[in-house]
Length: 202
Ligand SMILES: [Zn+2]
Image 1 (cartoon, rainbow, N blue to C red):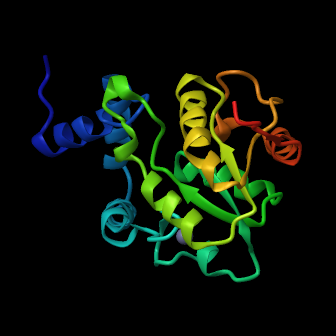
Image 2: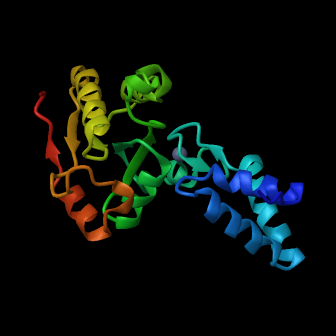
């Protein structure tokens, strides 16, 4: 088997760690990078290093941001009485892009998945409870993927939030089962948000 020079092999190994990238694609990407002009490679490297140096999590909503509190949390024109709870930053982006929701967000940082060690204490749940105790909230919207982990997380949160006497809603069931919020088109997501249903304590 042919051995590539170490810097190339290192890059192939790094690309291999990315989701959906196999060794062949990793190799193709590495050789593509090699053909790029020096400034372009440096730009690529700089944006990767900025990722770990400049991207932080907002202390309030836990979304990724360049500052904390983030732009959304600092925006006083947003409806402070509604919080949309979601699993990941890219779910937030999907909801925000619909333009349908004008409240605040809370990113849990994942969904419950006990088999893989994701228990409630690994998620930003205590902080959500603290917000409920501190602020006068009217509605909590649970916006999770309609898959097994998403459903389990919504049931768990609903039981936990029930005593707070706040309206708890979930996205309408227009989304196909197993669908990903991230890949759902804006119109479907907008309708799922518009037609959200109250979870009646079950
Ligand atoms: Zn924030």
